Length: 423
Image (cartoon, rainbow, N blue to C red):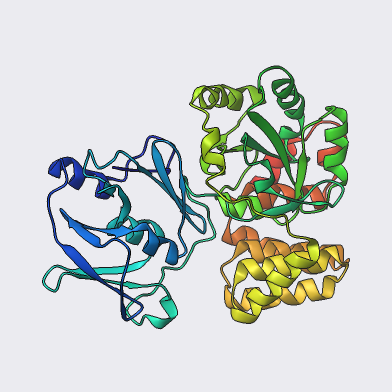
């Protein structure tokens, strides 16, 4: 029986589970011939028909780029950013172990990892293709940039407030609350509450990591981090990467990742850190699974040079990739090459004229280049496209009118006026 780590720990993959429940014990079935990349292959143990499925021996599964790790009760399969765990029950409930040999149902490999596997009951053979480019019948669906609940966190790297790159996977092994806040929002006052939580309640298995969403840079965020006497790590997100990856348009927000590195939940916060902490306490009570941590290979932290190389190689392969254009522009900005950053935004805009994110970034780089009128024009276009994206609006306001945000309390009455004026 399989259980997917999707939308928390309690969601069952019905397509894989229901047939097993209906069938009960494994029904006898024939051995299947295996055609792997167009050639018949001999395996140490055969593929077997069981009910609606063909059970694929693990020696073939690993050849498809799926790594397999074991715990006492589970077989954990990982490929790229996808992870699924299969109950290792010795074949008692429809079985993934037959005659002492572990196998994986073909449907799980298809549905979870988008692998091309076809079985033919008439000819009693299963055809497997490992390389999609050699397979005219297979087209891998486009991968959205947004990370879905239950997915492994991909290789995301952000700088800390000193500029040192930090991979989100660095914190794997603990349950992590990524607290997204901003100096241009009242969430800047929540930092003390999160530090108190770390000091008194988080314990050894929970880690808070702040993520400052600051398009203009770290200078204002540093002030509030210092005032709150924050000791937990703070990362800087100048490019709204986290907002794009997790699909939110306002702060504060808390992104919860489990000890394996799986996206567990998103917690909106309205007034204080205490709101989110209530939800975290429930999460902390769930079973901690240290034996699963080793099932997912650690992701090395790339250097700035390596990150740039990856982006350049990605753009060479796909020039219209908007996220890569945004990354390349951010790299040029960090290097002080604003003209090149603007050229990246021009290319991105030609590829997607409905992206408010591109126009917002374009306006930012123009503003930093002292082309303020042109910047404001781009920002107005961005707001017309995404008028409910408050991470855009509030950052634009804070850049244009810093006194309304950083001379004492944030002027919320002034913000309401700006909304009425359509700014």
